[in-house]
Length: 261
Image (cartoon, rainbow, N blue to C red; front, side, top):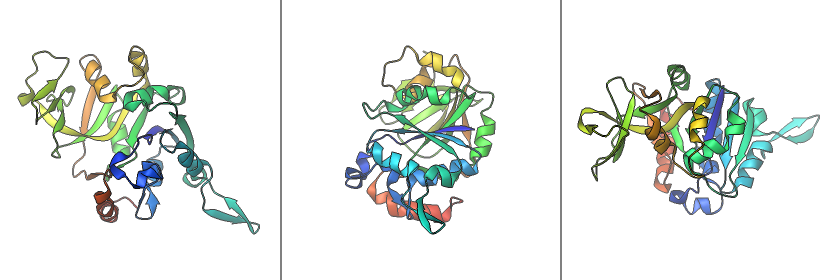
């Protein structure tokens, strides 16, 4: 099972920490966010993981390939890599030259992803109690599946009664975007995106005409009338975006209170 972790972002909301390290290595409860997400993926059965890198890419590369913790073998300290500890194959998709946004980042990683029928995508700064195994099973016959919830926000994805994606709205501005010209947003189910989704590799050819940098949500919205893209809700989903300094202490408590260990 294959997964991709979005870890290339600048982490501007976590400054000044991210002046010296990538967001992916910001610690929560004594462990980097990257380690937490990788361990969660591995527990759900994902054994082939791609990580995109840009901001302080060398530090993430060092973390993956030469973790600072030591093992003792014949009394000789040996560096244990994060890949060794997790048991997963971990590879990097290099965006050092240019940050490519979410859609561009996925397309750039295509050579590392396209040998599978589908793959899961997980933002590195998202903590949750999501049942990734159940979510993976739910999306096996779909072009893309997005983990969503009814949490309050300004921007929502719009779904019909079958939970098929039909549009997007900003409730503050009233903006609605959809490939359906007469869509009535008030009759749709409004749900917030979690930063966790899965995509079939059959969608890669449809990205060929897109610019180098683009949003994966923009891509999904452009094809949802032609491709089976659905939302998935997990009962009692708890989710936290570790995006600001004042959320770090709250994030540690979140880890203690959820199934994430």
